[in-house]
Length: 239
Image 1 (cartoon, rainbow, N blue to C red):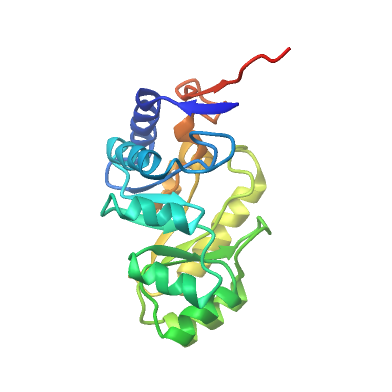
Image 2 (cartoon, helix red, strand yellow):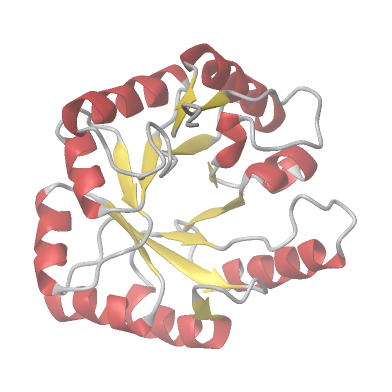
């Protein structure tokens, strides 16, 4: 079986999201792990080139990927920001990320320790847990890291909403407050990112510096008639 996506469909969805948040916001588009095949593997240069072309058409300033080998292939074809969402887990991966000028998400103390030991704090996105309880630093722990290591560093502070598809969910407002209270303790050059697809649609005023429209680019949001599917599932019929 294979999942494919249309260029025109994703271009249209990119324009739709831009209309919600405005053209001045930076957009970090996501390369879907299943795009081009359910196995989740890149088809080397061809698939990486398609990702770069899509990012250009979407006017995305950044491409988000999960695996470091994907990030390398895209970097070899594009000068856009390439964000490694899973982060790094070894000194070898740190060296690779630095060599290819990758942006890296830092989720926990073990990952941060690698950057600390190398005294390297460039291109980092720090994820904090404001209520989703999946990944990210607890707020008090991150404040300690900030006060000791990041008080004079430029970085992106990010979090993830647990129920952004549900505009009435009280958890959204609780997470917004937790995130905003934390940002007030940071210096003014810290960039902020909280808006995933649901947040862009339901709370465009919370777009901040970076929006992360992921599954929405592929039409994976069903609560708005402007969002059209841009993906097709094909599979042979076997007797």
